[in-house]
Every structure is written in structure tokens, then in C-alpha cells.
Length: 318
Image 1 (cartoon, one colour):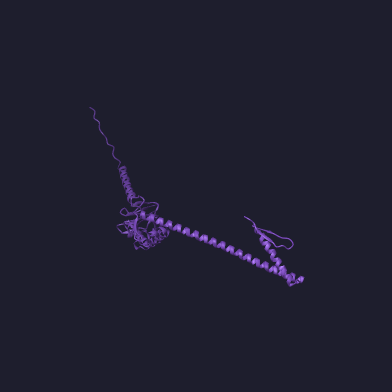
Image 2: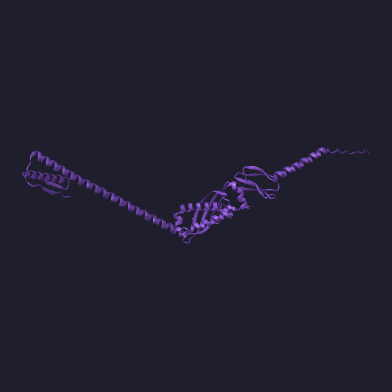
């Protein structure tokens, strides 16, 4: 019977060492990639927090990659634009919190809906993080400031004024919230570029309808007063025009009279007319002017007699 012997090829120790080294390097690279290398996205700022030294790095603005110690943690904050929506009953997915319950000056309850936008100053982000390590400054600071000052402002206006002065109230709210947020010590003046959108001041439906009816009545009253004033102005203008016309006519007659008197005086001087002839001349002038006036009246018929007969004036029948 033939016997077969098995031979094992000796393992190359160098190849084994290389494989081990490659595996170790792969593990090190993997650990480095997962625990030391980090990425910061667009609009984000990343800060490295080292628990051993208690240090916080300056913000690294994205998009960027960074390196940290394996035991350090990375804190990422959206600094470019943040929003806080407070509207509805809180069930709206776009709302962060429900609308704010407020009271008017005349103690009418209302629900105010508002949207606030802002940015975070990257240069002051580290101080802001020290005040709010849980990154909850929106809830703990901004929202509280909005509620407090919004309720104060609405108490300065009646329910009717919240409708009539909507734009003015919106501007006042934006100015007051901007001032209050900047002055909040805990926020470290890190909240910038604040914009406020007053979306709605919700009053009870019955009261809103009554206010709208009142405003409509006041608008009709204003319109009627304007129309009456316009008619008065037009009437005054017409009266003034008539007065001016009458004055002009009177002045023209005075001028005409003066001109005739001067013409008669010249005639007397040139023709040496006696006083008796002068009076006859005046009577003739008055007679002719009377005929001229009567001729302008369509309802008058006049017949001139002959050989010194008197003038007969007969009104026409309509």
C-alpha cells in the first residue's frame, strides 16, 4: 500500500506582518474618520467642546471640514437664519408654538399670531452657547420675550384700535421686540437681523362682525360729510363766480357811464350846446338805452309811433 505524505508550505512571516499593520491602519483611519473628523453644513457653525480642558473653540463656519480630539464633541448651530412661528393651536407643522393669548385695553381677549426671524452673530456664538449649552435660547429667551412684550403692547390699545391701527401696532411690536432682545443679558447681543411679521390679531367672531359694521358706518358717514363739503365748496365757487360777474358788469356800466359823460362834455365844449339842448340830449340818450334794453327781451314787442307819437310796448304771449 502506497503512503502519501502531506507537506505544508511555510507561512511568510513578512506577509503576515504587513496584513496586521494594514488592518491596524484601517482601524485607526476608521476611528479617526468617525471620532475626529467632522463636517459643518451650509448655514451652520461648528464649535469643538473639549471636556478635559473645558475649552470651546471658535466657530467654524460651513461648508467646511474640521478635526477634533476623539474625546471632544462637536456642537453645530444654524446661525444664518432661524424662525419662531407662534400661530394657531400648535398643531400646525409650520408652527413652533401656538398663538399668544392677550387682552386689549378694554379687556377683550384676543389671540395674536406672529412670526419672528433672526440670525445669530457668529462672532458671539461661543458666548451665547455658554449661556445656553442646551441650545434652547429660542424657547427659554426669545419666546418668553415675545410673549411678555406682546401682551404689554396689546394692553395699550382697544379692540377697535387693534383693527384700525394694525400697521402701527405691527411696527411698534417689531421695534419693541428688537430692543428687548438686544438688551437681554443672557442673549449676549448675539441675535441680529430681527424681523417681525404680525400675522393676525384674532378677536371673537361676534365682536369682529360688530367692529366691521361700525367701521363701515363710519366710512359711509365720512363719505357723506365729504360729499356735503364738496357741494358747499362748489356752491361757494358758483356764488363767487356770480359775484365776480356782477361786479364786473357793474364796473363796466360805471366805465360806460363815465365814457358817455365825457363824450357829452366834449360835444358841449365843441358845439357850444346850451343847457336846454344838453337836457334834451340826455333824454334822448336814456330813451335809446331803454330801447336797447327792451330789444334784448324776446317776450316784448314794441311799436314806434310816427310824428312824435309815444312808444307802445306790448308783452308777447307765451
